[in-house]
Image (cartoon, rainbow, N blue to C red; front, side):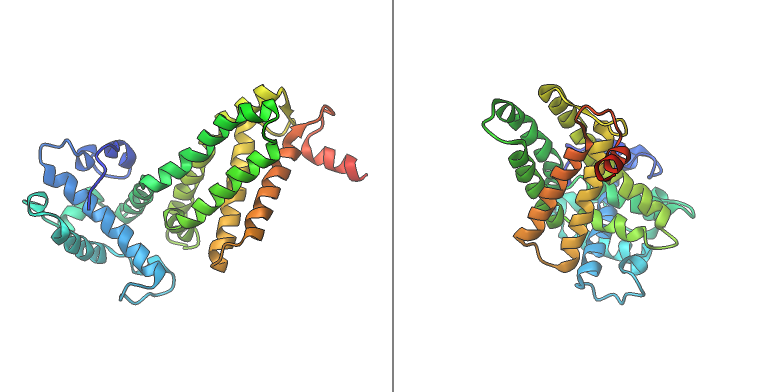
Length: 285
């Protein structure tokens, strides 16, 4: 078990942990950083086990109902034993250490936010977030030359993004589940919104670049930011549908690709100067 020290953990956890130094791998007391990461990894693994039914802990209602401070501390102690001797030297795991990092009545809420942010640093997740926009930008010149149709490009990228989003469901499942719990829904909304924003923000430059290269504009109620957020929300809806059914077939991915094409097509202004609702009414009126 290795913690990625290339990540700026103090920045990632800032605002949700008592002090930045508690999550800093450069801390002179290395054991402090190790303890913090063990707590967060323990919570994430416990969640994964409970959601997938691997945990022996009895669930009361939804999966996270049994993710308590005591369970996290016990799990972190077990993880500590997995570290090599030099890495665990001087590291102590206990409730006191947990409360020092996430104190007070809002401690568990802050800890859950750290779990979500930790999940979003998963290398596979970050590669997924970056790969689609990168591939799209690289392919835009081919579309402009006529070597590749825009519909084909959208289908390729949308299909790959959807499959990866479903495969990495555990990275976004936790904040989504929290939104359904009356005690934690505000935390879930904040965390899930942050996750969607992270995905959408990467696509804004792609849409802006495409609009510029193809010399087209969007309707008055759309801009690159709004279009990116709309497609992002649409992606998560399809991912939930596929994850809930437990199977990913070609028909579902084809439907998703066509629906993304339709969203982008609807957002493009053909020159009539109408917003989407007015254009729709005019079309069928």
